[in-house]
Length: 299
Image 1 (spheres, rainbow, N blue to C red):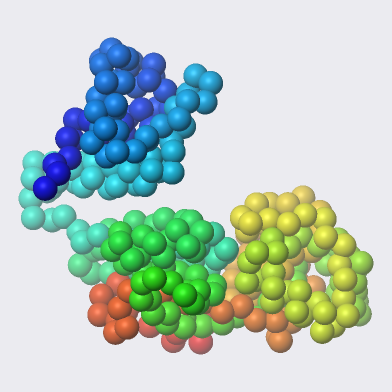
Image 2 (image 1 turned 135 degrees about the horizontal axis):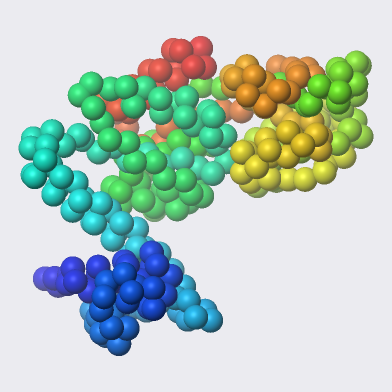
């Protein structure tokens, strides 16, 4: 069995976090050649390169990104262990790792996971955001307990996953007050040619919107497209166009951003899923998420 040298891993982790040998050397008070030798030893043990040079900085390779993910967890657990043993014996909370696909609006994601943050006994939630393929790989490797997505897991995966419907929401279109007042008249035809801020084409949300626009014979003027819904909301704050918002979160969104509602598309719907590696849900945190979503949030 191959054994991992944690000193080598620690030097690698520090360089990855600091971005260069020089900064890592200053932080660790260890010479740059010594750190470089330790990382080379780790690369030789793994049989893969962990960094590639980019100017004066060190950039992680694909293997480096994988190793960095494990290193983050290893040293996080180490800090927790020291805290539990020295300061809070026997009180370490259970860890629950949640993957959230980057296409799920952050407000909805938070509402879905909210019950986990109020469980007793306390559960420590670790939330990661990534593309669905990356998150499903981590789920298969048991590095995640659950993945929240706005689409089921794709077919043809080499590992078994199960998707559990959490609920669905239709869409309400919003805009800054002046634009909303103009577009509210003759809705939904008023959206034809109107400036629009939309999610990117590779998302389930955008596909649902495109289908609805086509059914209504509407072609908005697309000002910008966003993968990050928070960035899309910020652009709407600047009055650049109307924005689609899932109705389930429209009330707090309107209150927070100062938008006004234009109209509601009850036949434009987005669906949300919990994806797990087990068919039967047993984990208390998973049960808390699914029951809250199905019977309260999306009810």
